[in-house]
Length: 490
Image 1 (tube, one colour):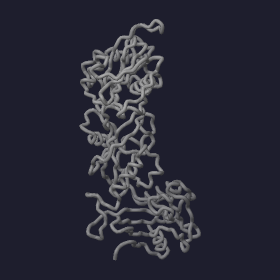
Image 2 (cartoon, one colour):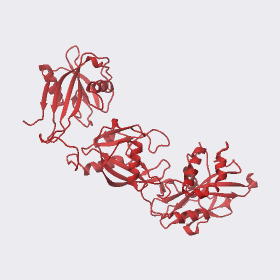
Image 3 (cartoon, one colour):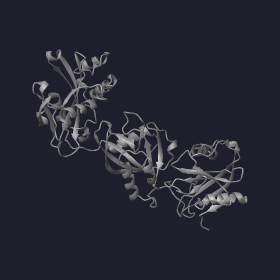
């Protein structure tokens, strides 16, 4: 589908917000957008939309080509909108590629225009009897781009329509309206980041990633990526851009210790190169308690889980680098407190575990995936961490999600508690073990990235590779005890 009238009107109104004195000049275009005929079609008269690309090199020179159809005039590359052009900017990029052989990957947006047209020029086109075209007008949307690299790209002219090429100084640009805009805007040809994103970590080795929507207009759809977005007019700087994006995408996500970390490069949905200023910031909350306004979900991941995710290009390497520079064992200043042997009070993590026994008294255990963050290639209870929910609700949910088992909360009772601290300085964990007297379903592999197999084991013949506190709980239940401790100094 070609650009819609609503897209064109929105683009015009944004342009007029910066150039209010030109409303009368584009009155004919605005009137055309009120009519049912496609204003972007070359068949629409007495005027229609065209698009051009203004390519600026490091010397502030602008690419011009000599058009056969324009009596040999030197003009910036451009032409009519085609049905397959998603946006006006995409039409300008296509024309540039066709006429001069410059791909979008050789270009980036200018920080001064940020993807909005630098100029909308209305000019008369003479009649072309050979084509059956009467005199009409072009409403030309002109988009400015910088070269992404220092060197100019090789030019491959479309000889059927173009006969020559020249890089002209801004003062020599042939279009009066474009020349005035270039001189007034002060484009210098030097790319700089126009997007901002954040590596959000908890200071303990986990990173918060954002799953993007799966829609054609979304940049890198259906991938896990960093939270962030593009700079807009009015943003003081890229930190302001990031904070605005956070407030729009994830209200309530307030980062601590926000600071610049790196400049990365990505590819936009239009194929442009996008320099991104990456910040780092700390947060340690529950993402399920946030009101996500854009995207599908937010989740914590550790670096060893990244190879199982569909990530935006280069993201894994970025996180690996940050993780190597900030190992979890080194607590950053202001990090959340951990247990230090009793000098202060800390919150315990709560885990829930399902103790199931079949008619023969055998206990259900799952073999964890070798790449699991915790206890890889080891047998363990069906288990999970409590989120914003009760422990029994968590247990019932995990049983359904992990093994397809349906359990009525009324059939659940707490049978054992293991108070665990795995390592010196580690967070204390209260592991609650519930037994279900009844359930529906046969254990099945629902999450193969977490569990490889379910198996019933004799309580007196448990597997060798078994999570230690799971063994302690099973032995405690068999002995009639309701409480165990592990890892605490005496």
